[in-house]
Image 1 (cartoon, rainbow, N blue to C red):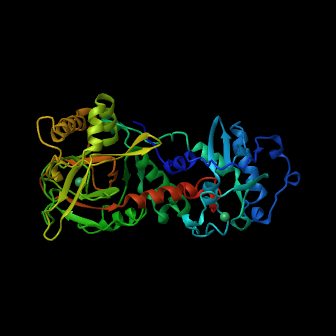
Image 2 (tube, rainbow, N blue to C red; image 1 turned 90 degrees about the vertical axis):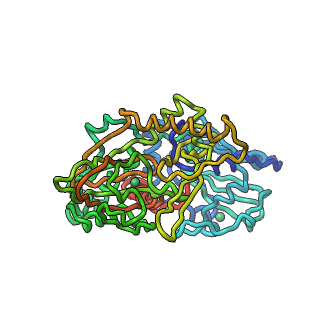
Image 3 (spheres, rainbow, N blue to C red; image 1 turned 135 degrees about the vertical axis):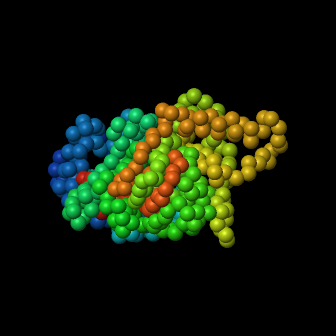
Length: 469
Ligand SMILES: [Fe+2]
Ligand SMILES: [Zn+2]
């Protein structure tokens, strides 16, 4: 199993559909020294190309320095033959059709500069369109299509390079862990995250550090939080909009079974992920123990890295990993009058990109598991029995002592968990235990992560070519 990010499946599909139209027109450009000469020695053939230029000379110089510092060949080598555009870069290559390029044109007719949205339908992109000319410049390559009202547009060098680089497996930023993480769990101080104490800019940088840790480890503690619901809610809002569910938005409760879920009891809860009965399970689970005064005891928090456990299963029992990633399992929430949530999805959500697999989500909640059925006949080798065998092994890994990280949280420490990866649980407790917290949707916290990464990176902030990957 490999952990991957980004989306390249579409590019793959497009690039493998090679245009077979014969036009016998061949042009070859780059990499050549002249692209590092002054702009005056280069020709930019149309006003459209100039309108599509990436920006100032400074920006171009920065881009060159970036690549020059890596000692890579830049720009990519781009050539046209039989209406197919060949791109070579860093030992890799790909072939693009004329229609693919027209579909990806970001000129003002094809793409809205402010909203970054496409402005033409697929039916407006003739699959048999011809490219009449490619013209290199310091900024990139200007493509001119036959017909299409003389459509001409500049595709900057970084577009070609990035397309080729997108073929390479992405390096995962995930750090898998076991109970040894107890010696140094990922954490950050509350004061650094709040603009009122740290200032706007520094607080935003700290939020990036915070959710980057959640991205890497699947959880992160925040220390020094005032033990009040107000401060906790304000903190959660630093990540994003609180997600409304049938439990409400921000919750603040004691164990009174006011809602029909064992979370509202005082009994022990084995490691699980939340809302497995949603098609889109809650992205972040954030909670804060506000108080648990003596003589109350127990209520230790349990965290388990579901990705690490899945990796272990795949390594030791690949067939079982396959079973858990393909056999649909029903989950439901039926404890509340008038509500019935249910899904039927595999325990492991595996996405397929370029034939390579990457684990996206672990759904594991034995309490909320529904009725297993086998529609293909039922015997001792039925899918149900095969699933049980795999699930028992996965549970054994999840419950192994080395994978269980137990911690006694105190008021003042907020726990943020990537609910698509890390399982949580708790030991039973006595006394009055007041908790508060909320969910944040997966797409919302990922959006916050990416926009902060963008804000504090060196990329051009409003570059149309940098969106949509
Ligand atoms: Fe839970
Ligand atoms: Zn266009």
